[in-house]
Length: 357
Length: 249
Image (cartoon, rainbow over all chains, first blue to last red; front, top):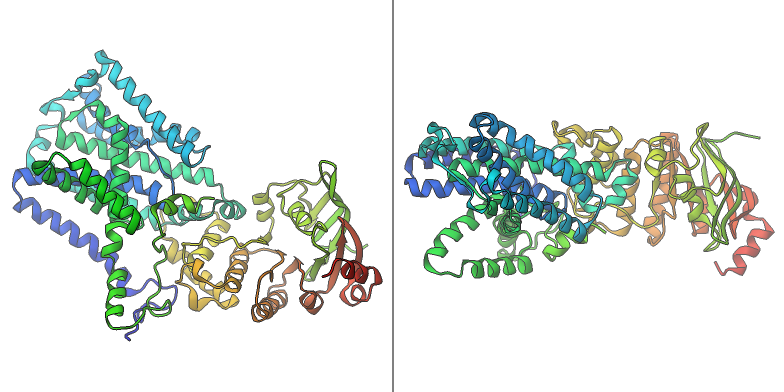
């Protein structure tokens, strides 16, 4: 059997791994730029939505997949990003660009406040506290009609600069912000902080014994996630040219969690692929049946039960290697293939909760 | 009275009416291998937790390296250079063997909140070297959960060493190990003492291990020190024999 790790050596980033981490972003960015020339305006809008949601899902997955934290308060960040732009326009606080730049700051601050309290609790209580926080925002926006236009929401083409409301420039802008966000988030996952975050997911007592505060590291993850979720909300305004209370509702918090689970929460791009599946599925299935939610539920059930590593797990190089080896009648033993460093846990429950005793 | 790296003076810990550790005096000399033995329930694990800061002594003092560390929180004690391995294996199961060590290096160098550098490049060399030393370099890329029990304990040693300790506290390091794994652990501990100048304090049930590598042995029974001295002397001590024969060890 050919030596699958000939180029890396133990503990090394094999050349193929390095090549992949350069090739994947380059190919994806090139594809997105080419698509900008080829796609119809309608499809381009769909793709913009996918990109915005990809940032939302990837930022949420920093908590879910890397930190083992199930937050149901992600809508608070997403919606506040959208509302910061909407309200700035409505009340003439500041120009679009200033508001846009401020959205990650606002998201980070809200996440800091929420995290300071919610992260003192664990698991179910953490999920419920984050849910309660985001419902608070939802209700506030819903009730203060004079300030936020309540359930009507804020709709206007002039909310974003004319240059951005043209389909193609809007598209390229979204591509740029999305790619930059994903690159920054990816960089964070391969930093010492990213490693420690995974360690807190695996065994928080051991992390404490190493002299590192779990609380502070989870809080930092929360702030980063909040900042990028808020930026994703700002992107929503760019292509949606509207903002309304549902962006703050708990169902919106569920979406990035679905995307991450479907796409695969143990790979960085998994949640982004999940966003693609989710949005495209939503659009095309909704055209043929009213039961989009039913289909979504079924898919989620299958993934959770059989492939907790999601689509990314199914498509991973390792899976193909394993199949290739099986067809050849040989098992991939740990020595030549090496199971993944984040092998798929038996169930999604075990994936996020099991390790956090 | 000789001064040691670690000194316990009249350390006592009560849990309600129960006295788990009762007026223990203990001096661990620098660069020595010192073992604490005693029947189950003698207070060995409690004594270790009093040293690492998991429990606070009811009274008495713990000095490490000339400094009073009595009642410090565990992560503060760890920062003083006293590293422990747990009685129950405690690793990051779904991270690779290498990453387990890398996480410890990142914590030691206080870069755990660093988002700007690449952990892989900055810690790989040192982590591999540590794995080499405990004989796990070939398994670097495996998830730590697939290692055998003995290998997991060896990995814990590498993790402990990554914090660059002056002293290792090992609570029953060979518990549940096969004879081969035990022999390997014994070899590793004595090599670390010789090569790194480490001081090692450990608790152990296996008498072959205890008298095979210890310079000094302290015997605990019902929370009290009943014997303390060079390994050969303690081995022949009548009271020690009585304790062990009585408790069927």
